[in-house]
Amino acid sequence: MKVFKSLIATVLLTATISAGAFAQCKIIAIVKTANWCSVCKANGERAIAALHENNKDGTYQFVMNDISSPETAKKSAPEIEKLGLTQAMEPYMATGVVYLFDAQTKKPINQLIMALSNEDIARAMAYFKQGK
Image (cartoon, rainbow, N blue to C red; front, side, top):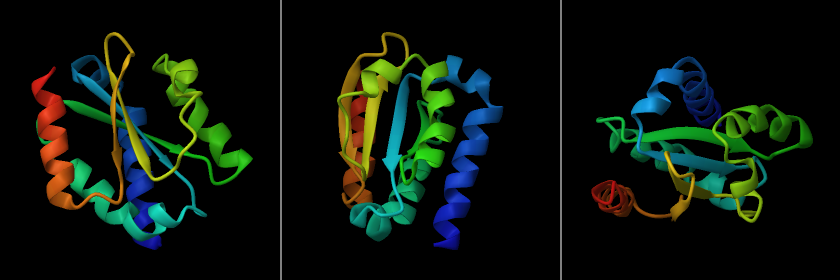
């Protein structure tokens, strides 16, 4: 759990301090998670590590959307709002999912389930990157 929290903090910090990266990224990946989500508990650390491992060129910009509690959801909201994705995220309720959006148009591209294997995450990320 400590490692998962550390990874989440790293992702949040990276997203916060690298505003310039948003200009370079082509796909915004909103990682919707919660501490009560069984998929997140079982796969979160591994999936987040796989996401980062397959993003060495910076095509994807990751933003954590932690809805564990009203407080964590409130902390997640400003970054999503800053990206112009608040309304786009409204229909997406499931946790344990990474929601992909085109960074320019803000239109949904697809979704990745955190329960996918590392290999499937890598293949999916490469596939979606090709379209950008």
